Image (cartoon, rainbow, N blue to C red; front, top):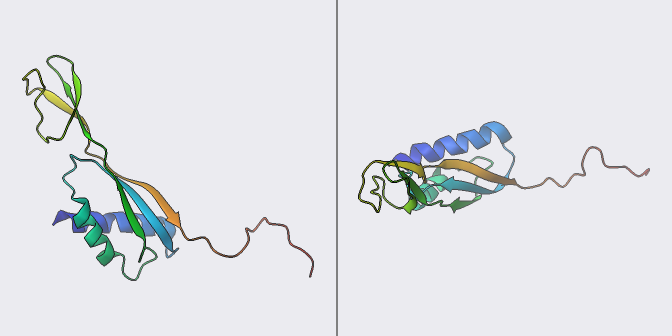
Length: 123
């Protein structure tokens, strides 16, 4: 299950930037042709976030479709196939989308303290 090592890498990248700041939500972009199974990644996410600032965070997925561009006829088309064929019958197709794996958004749990530049009232 390669999702475990991929998920660990995602969590490590977030923790490297944020430390132990509590995270509410993580939104990932995982292309439909990436070979990554979101359900398996979600299962792994619960395991690898235990004891970190990401523990209990919601994990969301954006799933962009696969895309192809035919080098024979020039047609650009959506595809769900890792080895796509063009509707014209050509196998000379460049995959143009759907292989992404990106951290799109990380929502942290805000601290209760006012910002450092907030005006203070004399007490």
